[in-house]
Length: 88
Image (tube, rainbow, N blue to C red):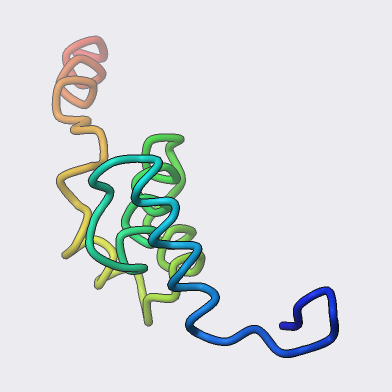
């Protein structure tokens, strides 16, 4: 990645942008990894599958994603029970 003047972007450039964002947005976490969690949470809230989220955030497989974020997926127990009872 390069700046508009053709010089390479350095880690310090990204860190400066992150620090500015943290000042504007309040306490959004200590590092870049928070953006990964935020992105995964946004995808989960829009009903994407564990496989899709794993692929997007760079997890090796959906197992890692489920170990980290399983509490965020909608609990379908009530819907499963209702479907079972409707068919009796």
